[in-house]
Amino acid sequence: MDRVALQAELVAALGADAVLTDPVSLRAYECDGLTGYRVVPACVVLPRDTAQVAAAVRVCARNGVPFVARGAGTGLSGGALPVADGVVISLQRLRAVVSVDPVNRRAVVEPGVTNLDISRAVAAHGLYFAPDPSSQQVCTIGGNVAENSGGAHCLKYGFTVHHIHEIEVVLPDGTVTTLGGPAPHQGGYDLLGAFIGSEGTLGIVTRITVKLLPRPAAVQTLVADFPSVEQAGDTVTAIVAAGIVPAAVEMMDALAIEAVEAAVSAGYSRDTAAALIVELDGPPAEVTAQFAEVERLCHEHGTTKVHVAPTPEARAAVWKGRKAAFAAVGRISPNYFVQDGVVPRTRLAEALTRIGELADEAGLRVANVFHAGDGNLHPLVLYSEARGEHERAEHLSSSIAELCVDLGGSLSGEHGIGTDKACSMPRQYDDADLATMTLLRRAFDPDDVCNPGKLLPTPRLCGERPGPHRPHPLEAAGLIERI
Image (tube, rainbow, N blue to C red; front, side):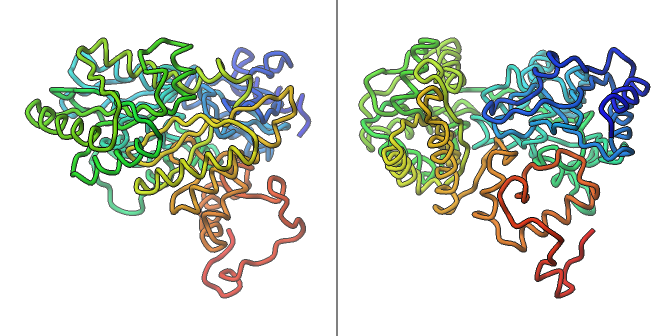
């Protein structure tokens, strides 16, 4: 469709103040947090409510124009990367906390509300929203739903999918519907579960009913230093094997600590190879007993120092450092890739050793920051664009993600596949798996206009053989059908 005609139709549907066409303004939407991929869209729309989101989607669907939903743009997998002739539908104006129900421990919010603002809105009731990505001050709940984000406390409390009752969504043809419901369990197919984590490929969420939790009665946090990342990794395995489920277990290596201390002076030891952050919460007697056991296990595995945060302010400083880690790495490297993979806890030490070997082979540095409790690694590949290291760094980053699969893990724990890792999906899933995912996607979006080119490998992205459709063996056997 002609770009000018598309812009005019969107202005007619939403109003001139809701459509951005200025080339300078459009550049602000050319990428998300993965800045290595950039595409300027044809236009950006800024709807104010569900009706306007649906109107924009209907314009796109009617004209076969691809569209991409966007929240705060903090994603790290290229999931909000625009399409050159397509439309970005920004949800930043949908930022109301619609209602709070403290009795039933739930709240209804719009997708542009930040993750942390949900907890702030319900704090007076002694409640909070448990998922806490490191970017929770700026990332939005709509993006959390799209990526099924977790955060530091996902070990004990789970991911976004475990804290959502119901969502209102606009499907790729402009239909508005509801998935899930007020009851904790719904009969029939779990379409809510399918939608959460679908990375914006099945529709756009416009209203979310979140589950709230009561604030824990007691919280204790420690930071333990170790002479090697392997020893710190083995300590994590020992803690969980002892039957203790901490609220959070995080780890940073020496490079990450160097960056954090330069940025926010959180109080970590600069002369240690690795720091393990362990937080326990719950009933006071239980926390006290388990905390003593965690300290014992840290000493048993060779810790050189244990610092217990004595006050809420001290705990806040510990977490300020951990959550600043990604941004802080800019202090020690002009450019970096943030990777996101998962390995079994029992293979943490092996994974870290192998990542170090891959980095040495590539002649690059890797800073490790991760949710150690559930094996969710966030290696940061440091490089210099000016020295021509981009391609080498990108290859190393992909190799680390695929290493996680080879060790029995996953390509992503919470950042998503997006554009960044779509070509690696066949490393984790076979043809039948990918074909089934494609059938589900096509059931929602038969015309491939909803965030195309993301999540699943395509010829355009991955160099697969182009040309006419060749039936999958399961399709030829009559076991599946093409929609």
